[in-house]
Image (cartoon, rainbow, N blue to C red):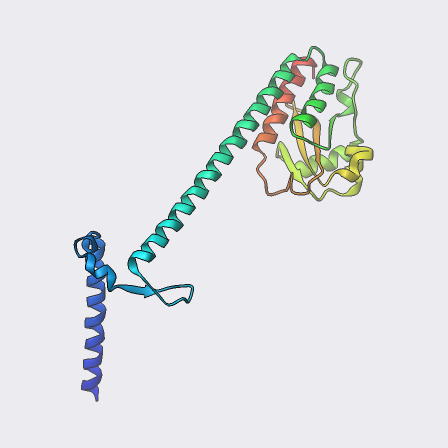
Length: 235
């Protein structure tokens, strides 16, 4: 019985080695079936839809179609991303021009809020400067020391942050009567290099400023405004 078992193992080993050898040979000679087209008529593989058997060539056509479909989808995604990047670049350029054209600090504050709201289709935009940095030439909206502390604590060491779970009290402080329309927001720190204030962008869509999204562009918006702010006001 031991001997019979040994013969069975040997036969399985030979079968396994033979299959490996065949697979290896086919990989090294992918044109084999082109040289022997008659084999295509005999080779069959199970059809994964349960509709019986299909020939190898039919399966190859199916695989090629799937690959082409995937490539088309990838190409479409690249085109869409390129278009989105182009739109963002154009908006950032327009934003930069607006910042550089401001002739006074108050014009800068007013125009920037309107520009951001229009460019990025936002529900509301607020720009807030801490009271100790305001004077006769700079008088704009502000927040309480407690509110600033809570918002800066939310930002931490980051220069921007996306939020869709700020508590109602902070939302009301930032957006007033428009707070109920805000489902997500972005906070942009204004560093000159002191943290003198922040910009709050409010959106009506919850996923517009989800915490998982990248903040590089938002940080750039804050940095550009901070530079313009320093140019128009002595901190």
